[in-house]
Length: 277
Length: 267
Image 1: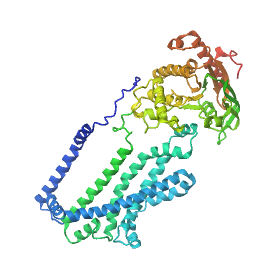
Image 2 (image 1 turned 180 degrees about the vertical axis):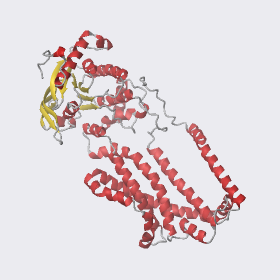
Image 3 (image 1 turned 45 degrees about the horizontal axis):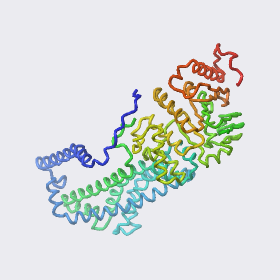
């Protein structure tokens, strides 16, 4: 076993250029895979004469994308706003509930089983009903679905995070004779952060799914989901695929934004896992 | 002056286990007292009762002439656990400064004090590191610096070096003695290790289990300051043997022949 003090390597903080360079090298294999898949797709569709309603070729999708650019971005932005709104509402309410439940155990014992059971219900099935509750043409009706989808993972994870404080950390705080609120701020919240961000990543994806699926059941024609639905039934498959691409772009962007916030909020974390002494 | 007075302390846990029974203990200011005993003898419980982290079922604890609770509110305790219990999201400097922050020290004074502490535990230059970047021994030194930062009257240590390898442990033992002498604090130290207890302490309190009680107190008259040479003195071995035999007697299972009738007195 190593006995001597482990050599301490300072974080390569500040060297942004070096980090970007390293980032590019890390991303290179993934980019190559993407290029390869698109080339293969193009080759198969052209070579085997696949019918365009089954699978349009990438270059046809690209043409549809280019020709409808402004409507596509507009629809994507519309749907993204719904997802973002639902995300914000769902996550805020979930965090609020989690704090209350983690603080008062009795309440937690009363509510937790239902939260977990409710999590197993395919909430998306309620989309037609929320469309009936709220005007289906407004963003609100989709925000509600997205919010409900976001609620459970965030709620369950934050409760677990707030409770996963080590007993010694609490004893130490007790020895400093500080109140619950200070313990909450200085110990519980930072301990819960990794749990929170794991949940927020999941929620960001769920919010986009919630908004788009909600739109399938009837939504404004400005929205992505309604457009995909309509174009598919009108045999405009290239355009439907272009809309899917836009949905991907917004979805991935959303996810990365959350991941970036995570990096920022937890700068103290090791960048490479498993290097601890 | 008496730093700690424990009178008739007992502790029953909810399940009915008697962790402590009839504990009487007086610790003078500036003493270094080790509590040693097998697992389950209640030594950690006793330490927590002294620190007002656990409420005793009976008896009283007085620290510097005050009830334990008042002493805790007055920030009289510095505590070090077996795990360093550093806050991962705080740098070394900010971990050390935490009790100072909570006590309302201003930034300048905090900074000055943190630097003093970093010098004391020989971690200068590591102030901006995060705990995960340090070795186990270094983390424990940060934990000690944090416990000492606000100059507590009493330092409570619960097997602080228990998770470290033997070489690191011996080095930190030496450092702890140096720090103890420099800061003139009173230390109550829980350990499993006979050698560690004898090397560090001015007095070793031997405890025995079921129910946890004090079976013997052994004053350690090794001269100060102690160095690695101390570990090789005949007197060191004599005292270690005495502690070992008291441990086995208190156990009630194993009675080494050589020790029969030798140190029966305090049981």
